[in-house]
Image (cartoon, rainbow, N blue to C red; front, side, top):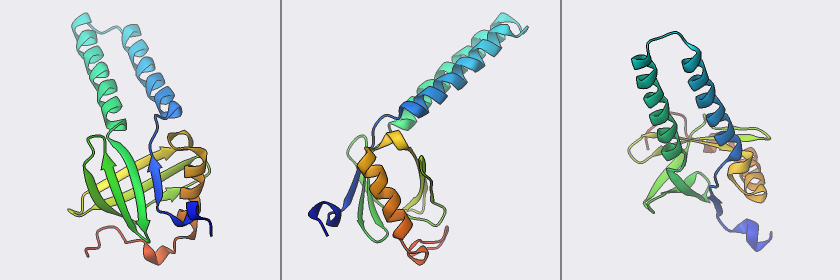
Length: 149
């Protein structure tokens, strides 16, 4: 086995253009629908501000985590944008397809953390390695949701 594949899998998150496109389209369509509606201007201003807050909140939420390191079996290290590290484990609710991976994680406090990773949120090699590792990971290695240590 090569040294590259024997090392822990480190996933450095990138800005996903697919997610930004759909997020922008949804907010723009909502703004257009609001402008074309026949409600009073005061309501339009309030809802427009809410749309802006929603868009900014999603922008912050999408950049919350910086890196995920798969240490061994089901042990992961999640690093947020400020550099704080937390140990997490993968649950059986995770999903993998050719263009999307959803990692359902739990931290030490049993708080759910769901990472949605479209194909362009990682490098091609990292995305492929993640899908392969998720495919070969035995289902019994995944911790069922809600099961405590």
